[in-house]
Figure 1 (tube, rainbow, N blue to C red):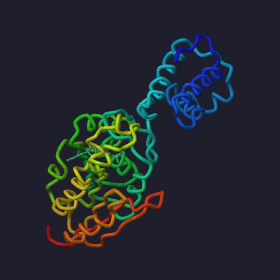
Figure 2 (figure 1 turned 120 degrees about the vertical axis):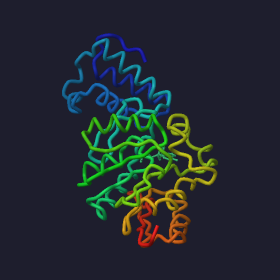
Figure 3 (figure 1 turned 90 degrees about the horizontal axis):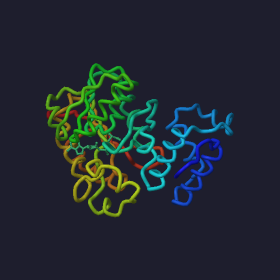
Figure 4 (figure 1 turned 60 degrees about the vertical axis):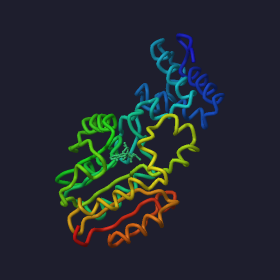
Length: 285
Ligand SMILES: C[S@@+](CC[C@H](N)C(=O)[O-])C[C@H]1O[C@@H](n2cnc3c(N)ncnc32)[C@H](O)[C@@H]1O
């Protein structure tokens, strides 16, 4: 989108909304406004109070480029470079999955059961779960693991950005955690099957990392490993808190029971879907 120098904000945003609408983006006016406020850092009411203010050539160019990226299907959070998760504003780019609103509830479930102690987050991505727990709980240690070096790099930037004390470790699932001393193990593992990934909406499949989405042929690879390896990581009485695929919730709960986890329970997300599995280690590892 090329904007003429000196165009008013109102005219520029209206042009942007037309471009987004033509590209099939839903709620194009709202997106045009979000792109402006997130990229330019203006207070939201600035747009309403000063719509006729002319936009500098530099800002017009930066905004026009962002609108083109969004019109090409790039997710809003990747275009602006920011996303919100609970109380945090996090950097967000293709190095990690964009945190989803339904993941936020997992933090409440952990905080309600384990307000202090030592927490591990496996598959941390942007660091959203580990950083929220560090910010909202009173933990002696929060340790975050990811197999992806680039996701960990982003999580590190976010930890510095929000000023949270989280240790970041690269590793495969629970391998870096073999101490049997954590009070809670939290994870939102990749949980799509290979077939589900193949038919995923291109707005997700073409942009977000496959490593963050695909849990093997049937989707349960990492979930099964967490259920299997998790008990060796937790102290007796420690909690496992997993985000799961709601279509496989009963299967996940059955696996947990068969492996000897106690107090296995499924919890609904904000959309009413069985999205979380909570379980407790009460036996010998
Ligand atoms: C669904 S994303 C969740 C990211 C973040 N926790 C969130 O909720 O937005 C899954 C994460 O697990 C990581 N991952 C995939 N396989 C892994 C493995 N074997 N060990 C550790 N992390 C893994 C991916 O790189 C990705 O960051």
